[in-house]
Image 1: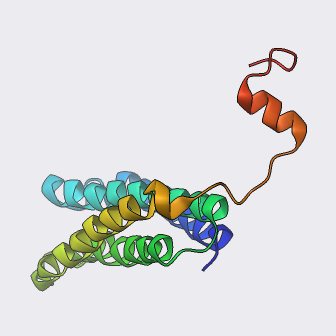
Image 2: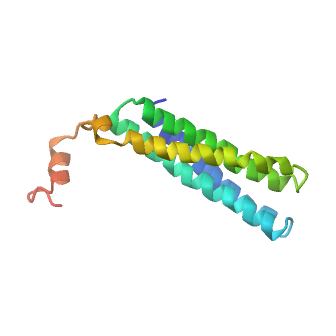
Image 3: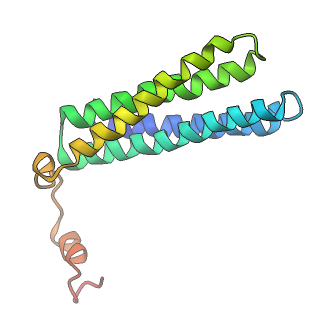
Amino acid sequence: MNGAGWARIGAILGGVAVIAGTFGAHGLEGKVEPKALETFEIGVRYQMYHALALLAVGLLALRAGPSRAISAAGWLFLFGSIVFPGSLYLLVLAGGTANWLGMITPIGGVAFVAGWITLANACRPERLGPPKVSLDETSTRVAAGDPQRGP
Protein backbone atom coordinates (compact mmCIF):
# COMPACT_ATOMS: atom_id res chain seq x y z
CA MET A 1 0.00 0.00 0.00
CA ASN A 2 1.26 3.51 -0.68
CA GLY A 3 1.77 6.32 1.82
CA ALA A 4 -1.51 8.04 1.05
CA GLY A 5 -3.36 4.77 1.61
CA TRP A 6 -1.78 4.27 5.05
CA ALA A 7 -2.53 7.86 6.01
CA ARG A 8 -6.14 7.47 4.85
CA ILE A 9 -6.58 4.29 6.92
CA GLY A 10 -5.05 6.05 9.92
CA ALA A 11 -7.47 8.95 9.52
CA ILE A 12 -10.45 6.59 9.25
CA LEU A 13 -9.38 4.61 12.33
CA GLY A 14 -8.91 7.90 14.20
CA GLY A 15 -12.45 8.92 13.32
CA VAL A 16 -13.78 5.52 14.39
CA ALA A 17 -11.90 5.90 17.70
CA VAL A 18 -13.64 9.24 18.31
CA ILE A 19 -17.02 7.66 17.54
CA ALA A 20 -16.26 4.69 19.81
CA GLY A 21 -15.11 7.01 22.59
CA THR A 22 -18.26 9.08 22.30
CA PHE A 23 -20.38 5.95 22.34
CA GLY A 24 -18.55 4.69 25.41
CA ALA A 25 -18.89 7.98 27.27
CA HIS A 26 -22.55 8.61 26.42
CA GLY A 27 -24.04 5.30 25.35
CA LEU A 28 -22.48 2.94 27.85
CA GLU A 29 -22.22 5.11 30.95
CA GLY A 30 -24.62 3.77 33.56
CA LYS A 31 -25.35 0.70 31.44
CA VAL A 32 -22.15 -1.23 32.15
CA GLU A 33 -19.99 -1.59 35.22
CA PRO A 34 -17.30 1.09 35.69
CA LYS A 35 -14.58 -1.56 35.18
CA ALA A 36 -16.15 -2.51 31.84
CA LEU A 37 -16.29 1.15 30.81
CA GLU A 38 -12.60 1.46 31.69
CA THR A 39 -11.85 -1.57 29.51
CA PHE A 40 -13.76 0.03 26.62
CA GLU A 41 -11.79 3.27 27.08
CA ILE A 42 -8.51 1.36 26.92
CA GLY A 43 -9.58 0.02 23.53
CA VAL A 44 -10.42 3.53 22.34
CA ARG A 45 -7.09 4.91 23.58
CA TYR A 46 -5.01 2.23 21.87
CA GLN A 47 -7.03 2.55 18.68
CA MET A 48 -6.33 6.29 18.59
CA TYR A 49 -2.62 5.84 19.33
CA HIS A 50 -2.30 3.44 16.45
CA ALA A 51 -4.43 5.53 14.11
CA LEU A 52 -1.78 8.20 14.64
CA ALA A 53 0.93 5.59 14.12
CA LEU A 54 -0.65 4.71 10.76
CA LEU A 55 -0.63 8.40 9.82
CA ALA A 56 3.10 8.40 10.63
CA VAL A 57 3.59 5.27 8.50
CA GLY A 58 1.82 7.03 5.63
CA LEU A 59 3.91 10.17 5.94
CA LEU A 60 7.11 8.14 6.22
CA ALA A 61 6.17 6.14 3.12
CA LEU A 62 5.51 9.39 1.24
CA ARG A 63 8.91 10.74 2.33
CA ALA A 64 11.00 7.61 1.83
CA GLY A 65 9.17 5.84 -0.96
CA PRO A 66 7.99 2.22 -1.03
CA SER A 67 9.55 -0.05 1.58
CA ARG A 68 8.72 -3.55 2.78
CA ALA A 69 9.61 -2.56 6.36
CA ILE A 70 7.32 0.50 6.33
CA SER A 71 4.52 -1.54 4.77
CA ALA A 72 5.01 -4.36 7.31
CA ALA A 73 4.75 -1.84 10.16
CA GLY A 74 1.51 -0.53 8.65
CA TRP A 75 -0.01 -4.00 8.34
CA LEU A 76 0.98 -4.88 11.91
CA PHE A 77 -0.56 -1.65 13.22
CA LEU A 78 -3.72 -2.26 11.19
CA PHE A 79 -4.04 -5.86 12.38
CA GLY A 80 -3.42 -4.80 15.98
CA SER A 81 -5.95 -1.96 15.61
CA ILE A 82 -8.63 -4.46 14.68
CA VAL A 83 -7.79 -7.22 17.15
CA PHE A 84 -6.78 -5.32 20.30
CA PRO A 85 -9.53 -2.70 20.61
CA GLY A 86 -12.04 -4.82 18.71
CA SER A 87 -11.79 -7.64 21.21
CA LEU A 88 -12.13 -5.20 24.11
CA TYR A 89 -15.18 -3.54 22.52
CA LEU A 90 -16.84 -6.91 21.95
CA LEU A 91 -15.93 -8.10 25.45
CA VAL A 92 -17.70 -5.09 26.99
CA LEU A 93 -20.67 -5.16 24.63
CA ALA A 94 -21.19 -8.90 25.19
CA GLY A 95 -21.65 -8.16 28.89
CA GLY A 96 -19.34 -10.87 30.17
CA THR A 97 -20.84 -13.63 28.02
CA ALA A 98 -17.74 -13.81 25.79
CA ASN A 99 -14.85 -13.83 28.26
CA TRP A 100 -12.80 -15.87 25.78
CA LEU A 101 -12.27 -12.60 23.88
CA GLY A 102 -9.88 -11.56 26.63
CA MET A 103 -7.52 -14.27 25.37
CA ILE A 104 -7.47 -12.71 21.88
CA THR A 105 -6.59 -9.20 23.03
CA PRO A 106 -2.88 -9.94 23.64
CA ILE A 107 -2.50 -11.05 20.02
CA GLY A 108 -3.34 -7.49 18.99
CA GLY A 109 -0.92 -6.16 21.59
CA VAL A 110 1.88 -8.33 20.19
CA ALA A 111 1.09 -6.96 16.71
CA PHE A 112 1.38 -3.41 18.09
CA VAL A 113 4.79 -4.14 19.62
CA ALA A 114 5.98 -5.86 16.45
CA GLY A 115 4.75 -2.86 14.44
CA TRP A 116 6.74 -0.42 16.56
CA ILE A 117 9.88 -2.56 16.30
CA THR A 118 9.40 -2.87 12.54
CA LEU A 119 8.84 0.88 12.21
CA ALA A 120 12.01 1.59 14.19
CA ASN A 121 13.89 -0.74 11.84
CA ALA A 122 12.37 1.02 8.83
CA CYS A 123 13.58 4.39 10.15
CA ARG A 124 17.26 3.46 10.17
CA PRO A 125 19.12 6.09 8.11
CA GLU A 126 20.62 3.55 5.71
CA ARG A 127 17.10 2.31 4.93
CA LEU A 128 15.51 5.72 4.46
CA GLY A 129 18.11 7.40 2.28
CA PRO A 130 17.46 10.92 1.04
CA PRO A 131 13.87 12.23 0.92
CA LYS A 132 11.96 11.17 -2.20
CA VAL A 133 9.87 14.34 -2.14
CA SER A 134 11.59 17.32 -3.71
CA LEU A 135 11.09 20.80 -2.33
CA ASP A 136 10.89 23.94 -4.42
CA GLU A 137 13.46 26.70 -3.85
CA THR A 138 11.23 28.66 -1.45
CA SER A 139 10.53 25.64 0.71
CA THR A 140 14.22 24.72 0.72
CA ARG A 141 15.18 28.21 1.88
CA VAL A 142 12.56 28.22 4.62
CA ALA A 143 13.55 24.74 5.73
CA ALA A 144 17.22 25.76 5.80
CA GLY A 145 16.42 28.89 7.81
CA ASP A 146 17.46 31.30 5.04
CA PRO A 147 17.52 34.79 6.64
CA GLN A 148 15.94 36.32 3.52
CA ARG A 149 12.92 34.03 3.80
CA GLY A 150 12.52 33.85 7.57
CA PRO A 151 12.87 30.93 9.94
